[in-house]
Amino acid sequence: MADVAVSLREVRAALEDLGVAPRKRWGQNFLIDRNVRDFLFRQLGVEEGDRLLEVGPGLGGLTVSLVESQAQVFAVEIDPALCAYLEEQFAGRDNFTLLQGDVLQVELPEATKVVGNLPYYITSPVIFRVLEEMSPEVMLFVVQREVAERLVAGPGGKDYGALSVMVQVFCRVELLRVLPPEVFYPRPRVESAAVRFTPSPDAPDVPPWFLRRVVAAAFQQRRKTLINSLKGSGILRLSEADLVTALRAAGIDGRRRAESFSPADFLSLAREFLRVGAAVEK
Ligand code: SAM
Image 1 (cartoon, rainbow, N blue to C red):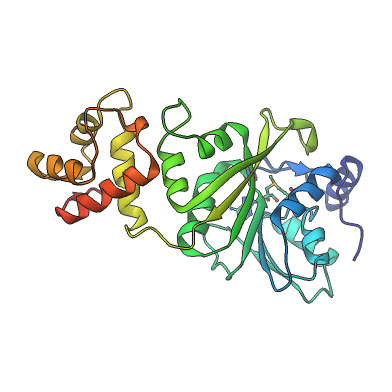
Image 2 (cartoon, rainbow, N blue to C red):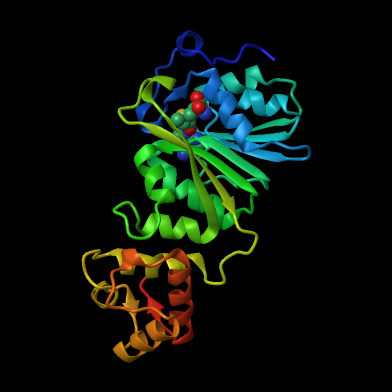
């Protein structure tokens, strides 16, 4: 395998050779720290027989560790210049498949583990696409620290909201490590963090799109009581009597605020809404 760019000097030289500058609109902040790269690889826990999907391989800094592990590696990259570079670097490696395109559009391959230093502008859509369309054992993503804190937040705090609930309904979420701007080139303005998601083997028994709308309605007016937020959101269509019945059946006191309820509470509530025949505006 040729010399994949990992350090600051190598990344700058590779971009210069390609005649391109980092593209802001594709969230290009390349990892330039080998220790962090090795940390991410270790935390992913690659095992024999794994099929790995990397989102946004960039210049291949992390990809090289994945390919050397002998696992089957699939990587989705949108930037044609970086794709040309990756094809050259990994030429002849039959355990590496590059898919050129938008990770939100391409057909995703089946994978046991999914990893990526995510472009910040599509963090949530990537997480939900993977959770809803694939069944990986583990996902490990680098995201903005502020998003990481929302992803792991528990009920009651200011960071806890629709994103925390929707992700935690599907999986256990751990903030593994905060990453300072210096480990990327160019330096982002904010800190990042490595987050690991371990999906539970049983998918929720409520369709994710329905749960998403219920949670959005609940958090739309955070300062109101849950019942008033649900009534006032314009998202849920059901009578007041059915609303009260569903809340009671789910064991939920609608006079409290949405932020005081756990992801499991929201799942029960959504289940009861389905039972009483609630419709939601999609
Ligand atoms: N993995 C590399 C690293 O850590 O150095 C690059 C990470 S950089 C934060 C994000 C990468 O995702 C870039 O290579 C960018 O071109 C790619 N990317 C951006 N939008 C994408 C999309 N919609 N689909 C696939 N890749 C995308």
